[in-house]
Amino acid sequence: MKAIALLFAALLFVGCGSKPSAPKTATPASGDVSFAKDIQPVLTQTCMPCHAGGPAAKGKYDVTGYAGVMGDGSGSAPDVIPGKADSSSLYLRLTGAVPPLMPKGRPALDSAHLGTIRKWIDQGAKNN
Image (cartoon, rainbow, N blue to C red; front, side, top):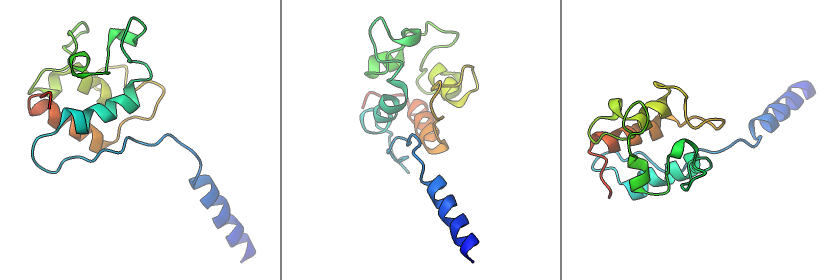
């Protein structure tokens, strides 16, 4: 019995280890996805460590605001094509459909966040 208690305590301790947490925005069940409320916080937390604007931004991709997120299409596909998530480089890189999977060296976005980004792009990628 003591061995089971020790095993449980060890598993509990391991399970409570510190690992990066996912952004805390919910997927809107219906209606428009808001860039300011739903998209920007996710990109700020997951992408900004590398893509924070200025000349030092990796890949010259800036996620500090709407214009930067929309990008100039300097890669193999436009960064965001309103209405077409499956053709948008941002979405394709976040899902790993186009390498490299982003964010590099950080936990991948969960399906809820990917779904929100997809919905935002498919709704026209509005600056709302």
